[in-house]
Length: 347
Image (cartoon, rainbow, N blue to C red; front, side):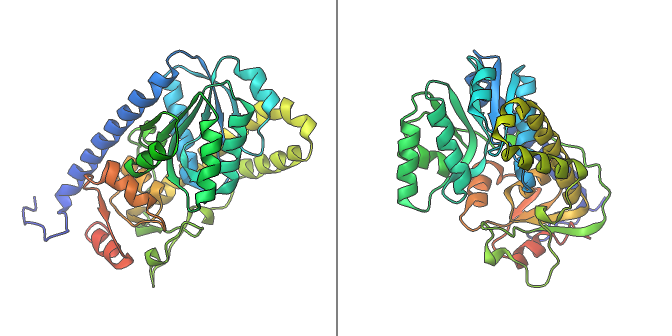
């Protein structure tokens, strides 16, 4: 065994297994925290509807969906209705829900950065003013005061709306802005617990870098090949789901009857994306990422990694709230620091 003390910032090879073990323990703790937070909110219901499930290429949202379904399965809840924004049908939801609870998917879209999702949230609250609605764990970010005022009007008008926030900063902001009950809860992907790493290592470093409106220019490496979730080719199932969803979107009369099939297809497609994302990360000895779920899935899979921030602090806020004690993850301010942080893992 190598007993040589590691230089500052390094971890000896025989310490990686310990870091992986500690990461698994942290994941188990966060999974238990999710159960302890969400399940009491659902104690008196058997039926739930899950709205705004992902049909896009951001694999992090698919991981959130998989974790949400895992928790609902453990809790013994019947998911009576599933829809994306495109396949939402108020009559279909009202008919299937009965006295159940509406769950709005967690993620990083509580705010004005992704306006279509925010508008959908307001629409559901207006459509079901007497139904319990739970916003699953979100990051909150409003750049414009006018958008925050619109959200306040929509949220405060609903007497049975509960909000879960996935970092301490978002929790404080939500409690200051809204009247709805608010609670702190980890990202729903942690409800999956530790995951097996099934993919063989193909390269030393997988650099997962955002290429969307949340990307931070300072997190872009100067000379290093990067990938993003969007670089993956869609499967036949995903392409078929998209075509069917687009066709039904132009035939509103079909939507209500077709919603169960569309919900199942969306869930199956998200499962494929999730598994592809896990394989993408597991192909590297180490990972560098500015995507929150690049960090979260690396912890779930037991992959050493370095973490960079996105352009408005979402990743740092989550890291400081829940995962900063994980020795399997190293925080980096710059791409060069990230490369230095994973150097001993990548060889």
